[in-house]
Length: 325
Image (cartoon, rainbow, N blue to C red):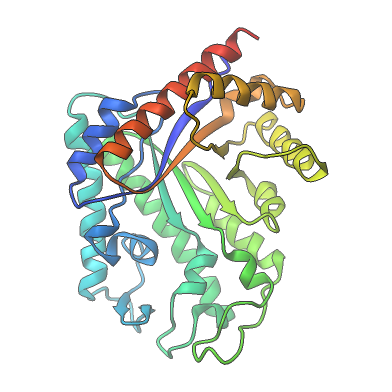
């Protein structure tokens, strides 16, 4: 059955995990995919590098300028320990709210390995990006950490995770546009082949993994596995190539997540999306590998509730409409 599903992404306002999970349970259910809730208001240990550090076996410490890799192997920094505790609380809270109801799938956004290299700091005070050996170590640690997170989700929730790997700034590393620690110059550029090797390691998980990156690197990401991108707009050669890439992926069984914009009439919008998809000659059967993504940005209760309901209506109607074609 060709059934595109809705996928929840982004961040929510406040500090109450249970409240956001209640909203997700009430407004969007299976087969759609709720998010492991991210609450920036809780603190820096719950977002960005902190959210990644929660899963790592290497020690990081939060400094005034960002997360810094520490010497040794023992994790002792309070912020990293707090990050791990919050990760476990976020997973357990979802299980608490679900109670006896099954949670088949859950989405989790993580900064990718290249983003971690760009944002994280070596003990020397330089960016991790600067040191080739450190880059390799961090890529391996990231993959191990993602596996730890996936295992934890499966054990507590019994859910199949969908990992959204945030590499939207990776092109800056390729183009030599990442500032050094002093800010006076730029770090040396990294070859695309190296980026690809990190992503190949990242997606080799017992889970569905999608990489979100810039237009410049999306072909590299698509060669590795599933991708996440905005709904292709316009009628030009670039858009045509994007749909060809999507068609190649879904026919191979790789997932594609397409971020959709809000429209007042979700039913009509769903039909327009399905028609656009098919008009470009993309595989009808491939719709079963397509996610419609609604991304939230510190959404409060009212915005989140209406947005989740909107996504459910959109995805449900798209599935019903595509079945008639």
